[in-house]
Length: 183
Length: 183
Image (cartoon, rainbow over all chains, first blue to last red; front, top):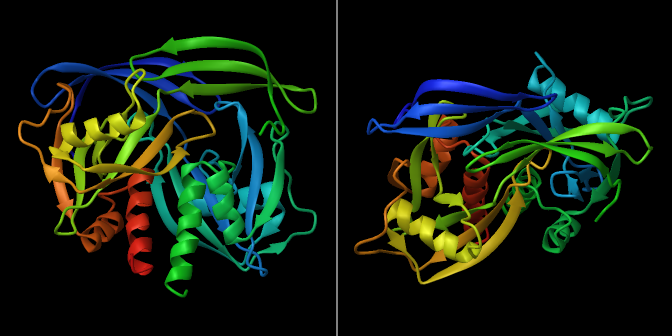
């Protein structure tokens, strides 16, 4: 899909970080005029819907510096270089929550902020989760607390603003839809 | 919610653009160690679920330079400085699609990429939409084509990858849930 394609006239790399990079592209618009596009490149990420035998959704609280607050989110993390998303999903689930699973089912993938970033989140459903002995732990600069919430509690956390990110909102709505459809 | 707070030791502004800015903060972690956080600041955005009398979802196709492809999304755009999100939602709906509405209902708000950006999307449902005569048009550097899709078509567009962004995926699932609940 290349409709209204914006041809790159020049591209200036502004920043190359640990996680993101920033470039400014000068583009030729479909009418021949020029404009600039500020673009964040990101390696992509995975997120996992994991539900216990007791029908609780596994979530993690962590501090999010960009908003200067903590958020409760489904387990997630960025792809390591060359890593298959399904392996990444298993790794993040284990590191952040101590759970492993029998099978990771791919649900959907979406761009989070298509107006300025290429980040894509691959969303998985973890079937047959159980606590793993000697589970790998999170990176040394990550601090997380694990929560297990019923769907009703999760809905309340959204109302209270404790849960407030797109992938987790999508995941909760996904579980609401499954419930409404009797699945 | 300040759990696991990361105190700012220093903040370096790397880039100040038309839409986003980038800073790198050095932070003190809860265990006393130091780390760096790459942070994008964004003015925030609105997105609108608009359904016609014929039960078609109003969408727009546009080129997304970050991914070098076009995407079909619900009408959306960034907040202008000092603009009330509900006014922004009305403005974007009119500019991108030519529709006005009787009432904008706030559905939810979510951070799109909490790991590196503070962008928040305020999602609205436009009640009582109708084509406006002499509607305002999009910015001079925006090129969009309007689509009106049934829910079944939208579900197929997700499967085909023509629709692939978080806010639109959430919006379609929202309509699926309303349908499943008989609303």
